[in-house]
Amino acid sequence: MLMKILQMESSRRHERNPMSEILIPAELITRLRAARRIAVLTGAGISAESGVPTFREAQTGLWARYNPEELATPEAFRRNPRLVWEWYAWRQTRVRQAEPNPGHLALVDMEHRIAEFTLITQNVDGLHRRAGSHQVLELHGNLFRAKCLDEDRPVENWPDSEEIPPRCPRCGALLRPDVVWFGETLPASVLRAAEQAAAHADAFFSIGTSALVYPAADLPFTALGTGATVVEINPQPTPLSPHVTFSLNGPAGVILPELVARVWG
Ligand code: BV8
Image: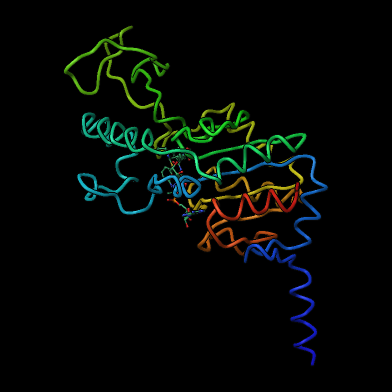
């Protein structure tokens, strides 16, 4: 009898939408409706449903034999600048063929409903901006931007050349992708803004990230430390999962639109 009561209690607490099997806890809906400041951290998983492989998913074709974590380093670029430049060119092609998915669009919707909304992304694919998000903090740069290896300043255009990577039109040094590689520090002002948003959030979402890469992976703990409601959206468990307030296990492109509809109508 007790189990029956608990099961009835559990199903009552999870407002079950007859149209979907996605369970959004009623307590989470209540908290999000009361939230004035929301911060969101996204990783490669939110672009998975756009057809962009996640960072740790096995690479395909020519790149199958390379480990992204070994390519995304200053050492790899120093060792073989052409290889690394062409890896980013291949990723640019993949991303250009992709479209923002319902997960990206749900975050645009959320931004319109929340007084103070900050979108922090580890992704370098630019899909949040293409979806229409405005306040985006790109912790790890953007693979469509290049910068001078020596000056460390962005380069918008450069003359056509057979040479790969091309050279800085200002000083002649090699160009490199304007992304943060492993072992490189994140842009201080961007990281500071992300830390501020996490520290002041009423609710913090960690979406589509394996929560393995620092200092980004510290942000949910900053939010937890200041009493925020922390929500993880991921089909798989991560090292963050045991610590969050709510875990929604499934694809962001399915869960986020449902969550936004149920919380904000
Ligand atoms: C730093 C840009 C200070 C490039 C990236 C030793 C020496 C040096 C540093 C370190 C060290 N040990 C540790 C460190 C720190 C290091 C680090 O964290 N390493 C890890 C691996 C342990 N961090 C750094 O180096 C950072 N800099 O600390 O500077 C410093 C300096 C010198 C010495 C010490 C300290 C710089 C980190 C930035 C690296 N650059 N990207 C590029 O993209 O080419 S990180 C890279 O990983 C991507 O940005 C990616 O976004 C990010 C994290 O990966 P995820 O986004 O989480 O993607 P992943 O594939 O892992 O997971 C996808 C998830 O999605 C999965 O959980 C999956 O289940 C889920 N999913 C799948 N489908 C869906 C889904 N979720 C929802 N819906 C779906 N449909």
